[in-house]
Length: 78
Image (tube, rainbow, N blue to C red; front, side, top):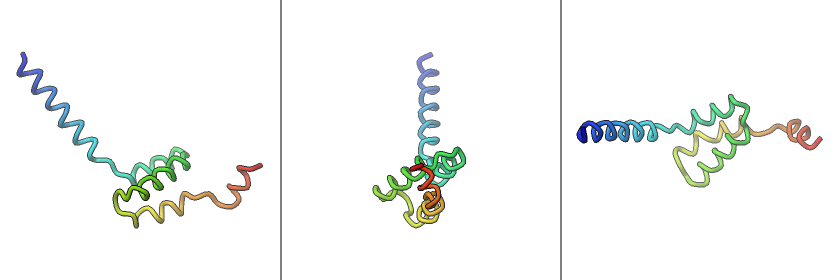
């Protein structure tokens, strides 16, 4: 019984480790954008850039696409 519990818990730990290591920042930014959470996506980009995580060149086009336009900025003040 103890061996069975050990095997199950080890398998679960390996599975969780595998799923956790598969974090893709680009996919996460696109998911946030599709959920209309532009601010969260921009915060994630800034965080990753400040901490030099992953390839920095990939974030620039996404950041430019997510930035607020002048009309959006004006509407937020009105």
